[in-house]
Image (cartoon, rainbow, N blue to C red; front, side):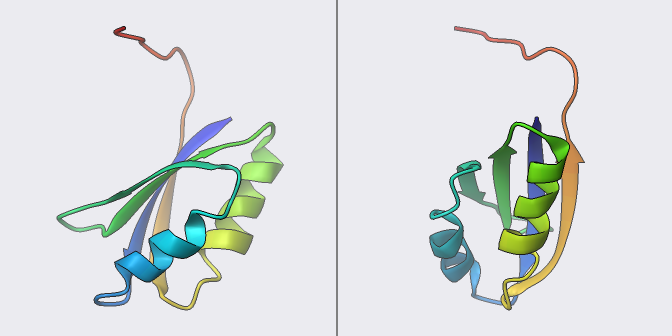
Length: 81
């Protein structure tokens, strides 16, 4: 399973959030953003339950996180390499 999580943080707290999330094994990529959302993370896990655990226990419970949107992927990945 793969999901992308869009994160809004408290003002100026993006680097704190990304630093904490670096330690979560299932998070395979973290990017800071310009625009409506502050951070996007890529979550990869064996099951949907594990994805939910990462989102609820490792991302949403951070005090600096205001809100999230989780996008679950499906279908084929296009590899351009």
